[in-house]
Image (cartoon, rainbow, N blue to C red; front, side, top):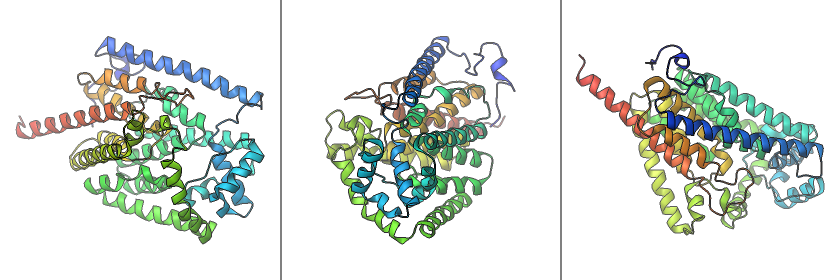
Length: 413
């Protein structure tokens, strides 16, 4: 999509030098203030994490990475199937880290990916894991964004920081999704499919992707994703064996029960059914709401991907629809929201911002601070707000773009 603001909009009069067009000084100031606060919190939190390296009595860095490192240790000991035995995993964690309770619930594809990491001691292994994730995200977003003047947002985006601090793979998930959208935007469907297939280790994030690809007639990307997913699974079967896959399927009931009995605190959930539970909404009503959000998301994604809209808009809607449709999503998984936020800013810089768009972006980012991603105990969080607000903003922009295209087609003069 051709920019209407020149080749270097950040140097034109009336713009911030950080790449955010000053169409509304008040809204811009609010957005910059929010991001500055997030940066300050990041510095404070990072300083605390560094203190854990110096003072080993603190909880290990990147705490959730303990689950990955433990599973890797079982693989390297020749007992890969035991990574799915919570009693053995818990005992090993208590002995090694003096803390436990972190089961390994991922499919064997992810077990194969992280299997080499326990070759190193825990701390250098965790640092290497985080370095790989962050590097992948930077590379992916470098190709996703045409205007990189606001690339710095990645550094201060709260859920990206949270994903790193937790030691989770949410930053890598975001990198694969961003890379796939960038490949589609650059007309490289085979590469896009490969990246989507590699994301299959996190199946709850892929529930809308096949629907979007088929609706958008991206058949080569769809086929590439299917082949990659099958090849990924087959490779893990060859490397780890049948017993590991059998153990994984047997642990699905345990994983379901783990979620149902509330082993993960309610304030960690970012899915609609989990978030509404914080307000006292029962499982039945929450499930109905979840199905409603999923239906709206599917409808919006199918409609958008059938239209001749810019890939950044369709991709943003796909990411947000996924966050609203999946019933299992935790707060750090919202690192994915960095994609629609940056793409919305890019679209606004190129074609102008719609009314209330900047305050909406600011509200979405700001509401992420009212969550437990920083380790703050909150019984009620605002973690469900960003996905809903950003979904509305992107859908409105997509509808406006479609209407403009229809107007141009009916009035060619």
